[in-house]
Each structure stands twice: as structure tokens, then as C-alpha cells.
Length: 182
Image 1 (cartoon, helix red, strand yellow):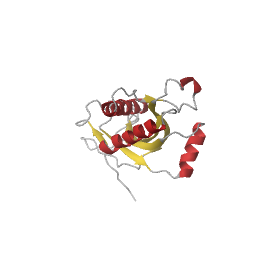
Image 2: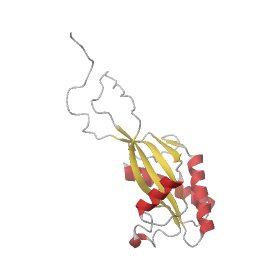
Image 3: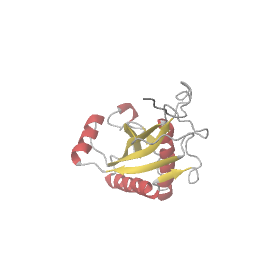
Image 4: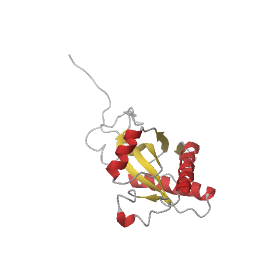
């Protein structure tokens, strides 16, 4: 689900960037080029999406099934926190243009649903993009951990990614109610 979600966003962002900048390279998934020297050339002059954290989304209430039962293990709701890096080492102005266009993409597409995006990955009914504000120290820490020099970048979260293992709810009899005896 994680790879499918980030690939979906990379494909959609590629379309957006190529509409604004004909001939723009496709958006890539990967570690920032400084952190992975073997991939540096393949990631040059493009926007790179890097997963930097996976967070559990605030607890969502369990929904009852049509028969009134509630699953003992509800689906897992995640926020995929990712870095969008404009990797244009020899064209700083171009990097700033691509970063601005990437931010514009997130602003113009805050939510994807089956109606607005029929190509949404299987298992997702809704995907929200949220820009994350970071102070300079947090940004420094991210780039330090990633092992490279700073490139123009922004941090986003893809919210409500649901991981629902088909076997998670098959561990017993459905709960249909709670009785308390004193």
C-alpha cells in the first residue's frame, strides 16, 4: 500500500509538472541523491519523493458492519510523511520553479477520491495531501539523517492510507454486543 500510494502521487505530480513544463522528467521515488550515489545520475534534474516517516493517524472510530458486528482489529490508518526534493544541482532557479509547482500541485489537489481519481490505488477510497511546516532545526535534522546537502524541498503527508490485512479480522467470533454482570 505504501509503494502504491507514493507511486500514484508520483504519477499525478509528473502529469502536473509536464503540463506546466513540457519535457520535464518524470517524478522519481527514491532516496535523495547524496544518500545514494549509485542512483544520483538517474535522479538528476527531477523531483524526487522520499518516504521519511510513517505515522499512525489519530484513532478513527470502529465502524459496525451491516450485521451490527464490530471487528476486533480495525484497519490501520497511516500518514505517509514524504520529502519532495527538487534535485536540480546545476539549475537552482529551475529547482525553485519545480518546487513551487510541486507545492501548487498539493494546494490544487488536497484530496483524492474515487470520483476525482479513478486510478487511486486499490484499497484506498480517499487520500489527502497535507503540507507540513518545519522549522529550520527539523529541516536540518532531516537532511542530516538523509546524509546529504540541502536541496530545495518541502515535506508533505499523505493522510489516511489504510492498511487492512484481510486476515486481521478473522480471529474469532464477531462482537455483537457487550453485557456486564455484577
